[in-house]
Image (cartoon, rainbow, N blue to C red):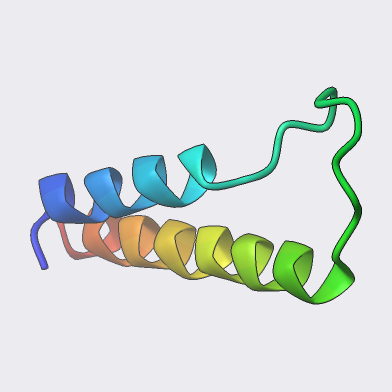
Length: 53
């Protein structure tokens, strides 16, 4: 994975996070955890790419 791919993955993962200000949205803890885990994994990939440079 290139650094640009990793950054794009992180950008996509963050964009998928729910908007905390959205009225009427029900809180789904499992979905919330899955999305934050995706952000974590994407951030780790970015940091791994930076570490290789």
